Image 1 (tube, rainbow, N blue to C red):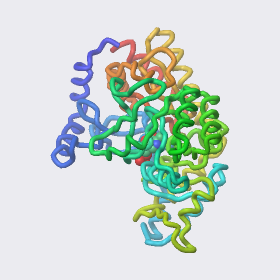
Image 2: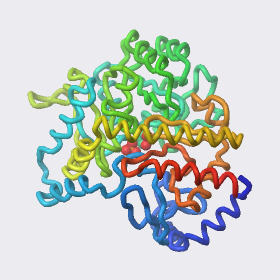
Image 3: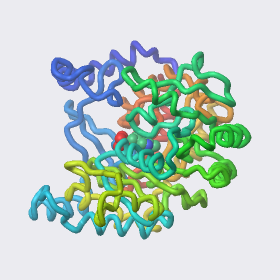
Image 4: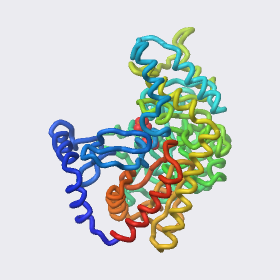
Length: 440
Ligand SMILES: Cc1ncc(COP(=O)(O)O)c(C=O)c1O
């Protein structure tokens, strides 16, 4: 790529005057104009609408959407079955202050799909799901600390916002990472109560968990590590080490549940004690869920009197989100997953052929319908490996792809395909990346 960031951003500004005006207006009333994840220089596009696999911005341009709302839109935009389910629920009322039944149907569907989940509860986001799962693990075990992996993201509450993206000069030794708070204003106890584990290193994980076993309530673990899928032997070792040390294992399937009917845990053949969900199970609406062993989840059953535990929320199990999620899961048959994941494999294989042919230090890393494009060469398995990535190059490629009509997540990590796509969209993205690398 030869185009400078300055020239790409200049062309970006020229082609998106309405987005620019929308952003300036937003900045007057919202800090930074948009939530942090949406911002990228010079300003984010404002979208007017989505249809199938396409997004249309307020300047009238069309993009093929490979971001799919932070991976949550697995059927694509405005899927007719989801729209019908929402409409049907809306006609019965939006929120009725009582169970409506559809939440039970969705819970049954999820328990049927995920063998380790005997009981579950709904909440409003992935963040809430991990908050309640960690709290339950602490209460059940009577122990104060949690272990998490360096670079692992599990939402934005204090317990898990530790060592998510620590600066390397504060991160400590690779095999015994320091606990570094990720945001200002966090309780100092969050870092004190976190044990940080390195990915891809069974020996270090075993040593750290054994050392802290009497104070550890749980390990929270995303086996695809953002999108750096971990070796099956490593994932299974994490399960064995936690089991041997009698430490609960929470598997974070908030994104991973889109890889197959039984989620990541089925594909890695592990049985966690608790699991957290979000994203696709709400069909595009705010949602979260956590579930697992009946003896642990039973702490939330207060029908025979107080257990000392509690989980609630005005909008938890919101009927419209439940209806949209149920309609979505009903479309996610084994055949649908096979088609979608086949597209993901085709995309990564073709991209990596392209990068090899062009001898460009870029690689596609994927799992099922999820993929990241990392501007880095060599094996990538840990948070620290990713520190080598060239973020300026990722920004240039991101802007160049917008010019070619492709919308990916900024930074090019955590992209996802949808069932509204076929081979033409996948091959189109490969060609667009080829052109972007050649011309710019
Ligand atoms: C693995 C993982 N866990 C948890 C979360 C938090 O979910 P939410 O954004 O719904 O709070 C995310 C969000 O991207 C995630 O990727």
